[in-house]
Image (cartoon, rainbow, N blue to C red; front, side, top):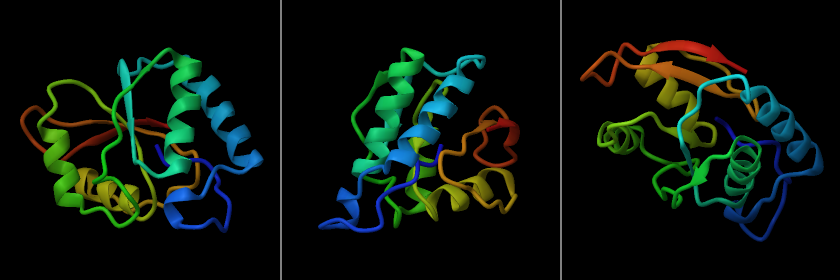
Length: 139
């Protein structure tokens, strides 16, 4: 998932909070996710807008919030994130930023997509592989 719409300015990029419209769009998506089989927990970037997004999604869908991954910031390295994902033996729900989320989707599926704020993509990877993922659904 990409975080919701965030304020244009803050003392630093990491401290940009969700705007009120960003909170509303994330709440709307959180309600739509109720009909899907989701992982038990959610992991976000440590940036404020991502942690706020994760909190809204978690509260609405009874997900546990795991410690943020410092590797999933806007300038995060796709290879590092792929390695972290491959170390997991269970489905994972991540809250990311542009451009990292678009680069990650491209690396996993081979598809270049525009990813608007609060967009969610569910992907299924072939067993034992980190490429050739299929997008099962998106909101």
